[in-house]
Amino acid sequence: MKIVFVCLGNICRSPMAEGIMKQIEPDFTIDSAGTSDYHIGQSPDHRMIKTAQKHGIDLSSLKARQLTTDDFDQFDYIYVMDKNNYINVLSLAKTDNHKSKVRFMLENNEDVPDPYFGGEDGFVNVYKLLLDGCQRISNAFRKR
Ligand code: 4NP
Image 1 (cartoon, rainbow, N blue to C red):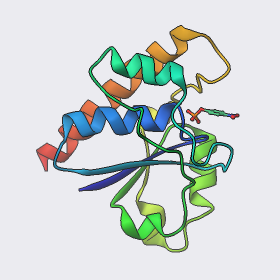
Image 2 (cartoon, helix red, strand yellow; image 1 turned 45 degrees about the vertical axis):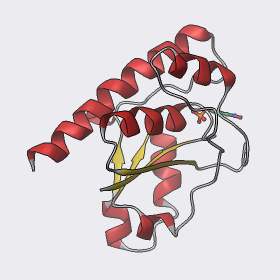
Image 3 (spheres, rainbow, N blue to C red; image 1 turned 120 degrees about the vertical axis):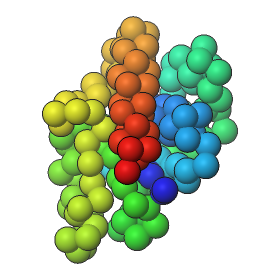
């Protein structure tokens, strides 16, 4: 199974999802990317690295990149964090098969809130939401 998680900057939410999913499903191919080019080449936000560390996850070696159309061929599923990501990711899709790979991270198309401009508690909240989301995704794959 090959999964890429997507957010806006690829420095907060999607690297955290990548780290959690690698821990839950070590045999899957897991990656993350951003819809924007704002932070290409940068490490995850230090607040996200710190939150991850508390749960035994090391994000420090990850580097932000931007999602490309090629990713639709490389990955089986593309999980997005919010509705803006969804719109931006779909705009890169070239075929119906590409479009069918795009999913929301959370149930009921709920957003994983962008923690970038907020305080420390936003990062803890993101971790909790992503842990629930990754466990649900993993369970769904195991049932098939
Ligand atoms: P992310 O968070 O999409 O979860 O990586 C953000 C990071 C940077 C910005 C916005 C959100 N920014 O505007 O620079």
